[in-house]
Image (tube, rainbow, N blue to C red; front, side, top):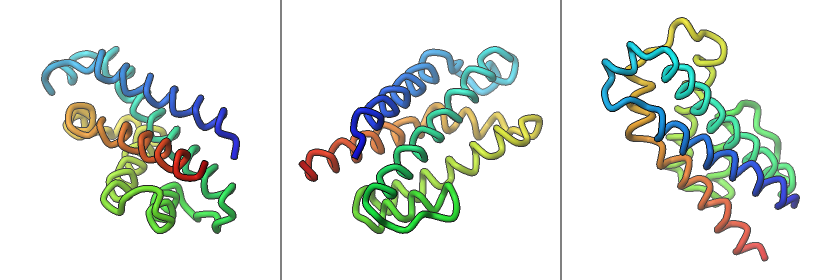
Amino acid sequence: MDWEMINQKLESLRRSVARVKEKCPDSLDALKKDYDAQDIVTLNLSRAVQMCVDVGAHLLAESKLASPGTMGGTFEMLSEAGIISPDLAGKLKKAVGFRNLAVHNYDAINWAIVFAIATTHLEDFLVFAKAVVDFRQAEC
């Protein structure tokens, strides 16, 4: 297992979460009016999701488990392997849906959803990072 690469991705994940916390306005109305904040928050949320997918895919590949057919499937398989909880897998699958919308259909973003993720679901990414670290420690 390439733990150095995984640790680098987890650090990038933590930086993205920190940027969202730092740059997300205090209200939905403020976010709707602040195009720079929209860009920074959306980009860093998308990066956070992608980092989780990348780390998860690497863990699955190194564990010789089947490759998931979708990004969301990565989290289902991590849950089945006991690396993350089913609840977290469900939350991260929803985050993949957000990421796909943000990357492929930016003009249709619902800023209320972005604000909700940025203000109430950032912890999900840190819980994922902790689960990966816990998995590493159990493996060693």
